[in-house]
Length: 387
Image (cartoon, rainbow, N blue to C red; front, side):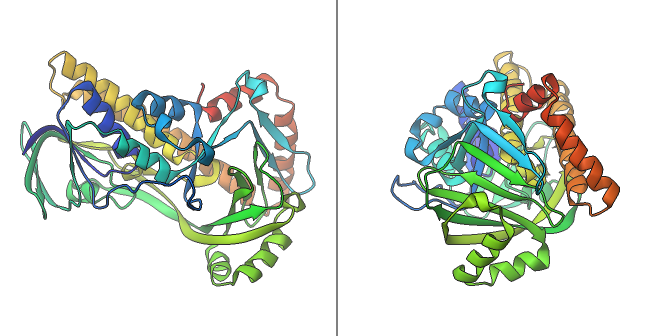
């Protein structure tokens, strides 16, 4: 089987990229181990949710996927609040940047299901599919799969997650580290309907965050030492409820714990996004501290830029793997991703420091930022994806 593009990985980023190219008329094959499952409007909320900024929302609307999602399972937020203990909060609001809202909280599985639902018949989907080897040739790449034999494409896209097999098979190294911390996601139901606000409290052990969901549902995010998070994960719902009550702000009010899961915090960055005719995007290329919820937004930005470059090249009859196309993608996205990753690392280190001078600077910084007018508005626009 021969194609223009072979996309390995049908998650949110890979599916959106494959869909865009197929809609433009390129021949595309998507290889994925597990098919996306339809999401019922009445089922319980999934633990994995993302803060989708305005730029990502526009991307999903252009693809026709946003319109297919259940609106009653999407939560808009108009305010983002950051605070530390008794210090005055730092608020970013949609009104300050003259926008109707900052973004939406959406379940990852609903985004993926909507993208798959929008696949045209011209997009070949091979699922399940397991890639065993990659062979590079001057004009194409050959993928040997366990279930479907040989797949030949002019360009192969690795969008298969943080433990990318495509990255490994292509011989692309990566660097990174674990943060010695872990993150717990806790699905709760509150005594009152959600507010149009997501907030984050900074502590020396790590942030405590609240992500609103529709109705009375919400998601708590607890960052702490990996051993501490493992202890919390082993507790009963009643014990976990007591711990949350003791360590989260009182503004949470009455709530019920429904379910939880946790994962270690890891940063990784591929040494290169391009090798021959193999290209990485999304978590296969970079993983970031989830502190600001920018992970999937960065992945969508990868997909959006590279799709634009490829479609323009294809329409001009240019080689899809030309140096101009591939180097432009790698240069633009590596700079943007490394900038965000480095900013989150600085943010993470500053807010978890127990040193008194750092604490004083941190609190002064929050106070000044709250009064920073145009600078504060610029940061708000960047976070909302309108800058």
